[in-house]
Length: 234
Image (cartoon, rainbow, N blue to C red):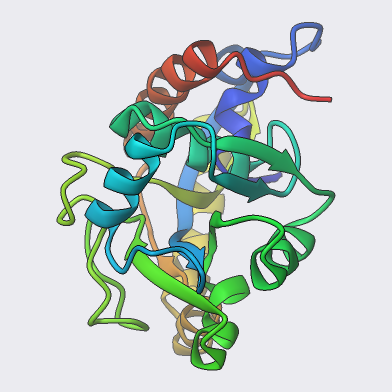
């Protein structure tokens, strides 16, 4: 069973009537990959850096709109984390997919988006949108000159969609170790690595304990954002 994205660890915070609990019902095998996002704005927005966007948003609370792939989506939560970390007031405009959210930015329907690199990178050369920062804690090899949001003044900001292998709780440790060993060999294969890089992702191999620690830290982090923003899935 492969489960993906930050929405995994926020399911129990967003959906109130689930019949499963992430901590109780799953056991980690390994983290597989992480995909950073790009904070981008429409070309008409008078901001060329993250700091300038924050200054602009604070001067015009409730005037700038950010597009997402829908309420409760990773793009929604990532932008809410940005709001939570900076105190800015941005209007949420949910769309039905990340592609439609990017299209809204390109057309100027929305002024801001925080979405995966694969959605944004092809459009940067057009001049219709501007990339301000990378959401990970370190710069991406695919855009080495683009600063991180954290180094641009939002200390501690880190957001990415991530992919991991989990199995039902109670799965024998020997089976978990066997699956983990096979996955590690696959993840370390050059073709796998190259494919992940082409999607703007970085591969990872972790122990079950390391994945559990990461998962629990993510749950605590996103629970704060969800409560502060009052996020509920539609």
